[in-house]
View 1 (cartoon, rainbow, N blue to C red):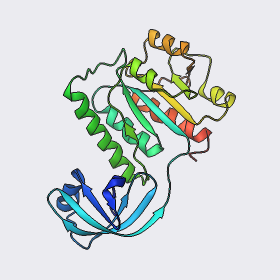
View 2 (cartoon, one colour):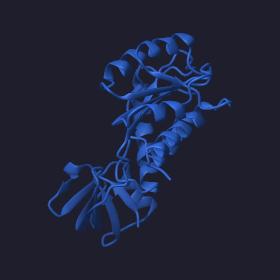
View 3 (spheres, one colour):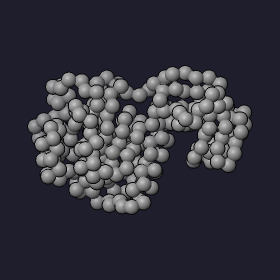
View 4 (cartoon, one colour):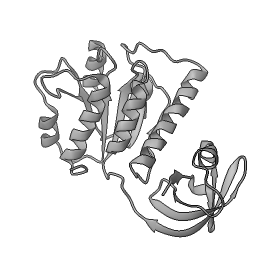
Amino acid sequence: MPRFFVQPEQIIGNTALITGPDVKHISRVLRMAAGDALTLLDGTGSVYSAEICEINKEEILCRLLGQEKTDSEPSLKVTLVQGLPKGDKMETIIQKCTELGVHRIIPLAAARSVVKLEGKKVAERQERWQRVAMEAAKQCRRTGVPEVQRLRNWDEVLAGMPSGVLALMPWEDEKQQSLKEVLQSVAAPSEVYLFIGPEGGFAPEEAARVREKGFHRITLGSRILRTETAGPAALTMVLYHYGELG
């Protein structure tokens, strides 16, 4: 059965409104009509069985038939801070990390990021990336959609980090401390930040800066991973270690 996310405020009593791009997808692509059944999710763990009552140009009115509270979200919140890569790699990273269970994704304008986004392109790209996360969440049957923030610089990312998080930076020049060793040596955190560099990795000055902040610079092994591989790989290892996968 088709699944669609709605904002909690779009659910009023026993009705719900679907707006935005999903209206066109439901009416023109899926060719659904009044009386057809679908599943609605509010992003907070509530799942509703519903049927379409009315399809308009800008919105679709649905009647809610039942509600259940399920939660496929990991209890451990992992934020991926991804150095902005070239081409459509960011979309691939968002898609795969959403499937795996990432909580939040923050694109980072790193020193070696080739792509430079400015002005309205920042907002346009964020909107596109958030849509990718939503579609991936639908496909893998998550009950929540990871937040994809706008492109940020180092100062913004560091200032926005909550205290007490476990911060990990896989870095190709780190030869001693492995991810496994760090995870085995620290108490189970409530939140993890993973920092992944763009093509070319993080610059030495970036690695030095985060070390001063108490981040753990780690190695993921003897092989160098592409930027679109490193994030999903590290995320999988962290979630597996804490019992959220496997």
